[in-house]
Image (cartoon, rainbow, N blue to C red; front, top):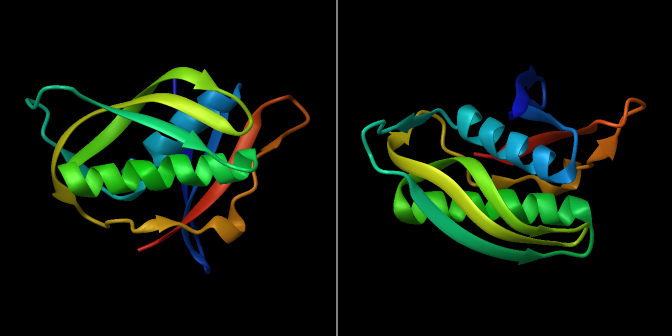
Amino acid sequence: MPTFDLLTSKDGDKVKAVGMTRAGLLESALSGMFAAAGARVTEEAPEVIRPFSLRADDFDGLLSGFLDEAIALSVEHHEAYQAVKFDLITVTEAKGAYVGRRVEGFSDPLKKVRRDVVKAERNEGGVWEVEIAFER
């Protein structure tokens, strides 16, 4: 179950995502991102699946690329993604598919992840956490 909070700060709105695994963290970040964008999902629309295959130098880069790819596909296809099906996930690579629905629009569209502030870490309880800021 994706877990996230929408945070407001003097530096702008952020999403704080948490997950027990890296995959769980990515899914929570994805759900939080589309919540922050104010996705107006067309509920009666059929489910859509958009495949992805990503590589990065480190997990923070992979997380940023994963979210940026979802934004790009969202803009291209007028969709929002609420879930992910992973075929592979490592520290530097992810393959799978975004799962979502068509949207009527977004109340606060996002352009991309601010990569300079993305730093995923495991807390003392072993839970993955990250705060993500976006360009609007």
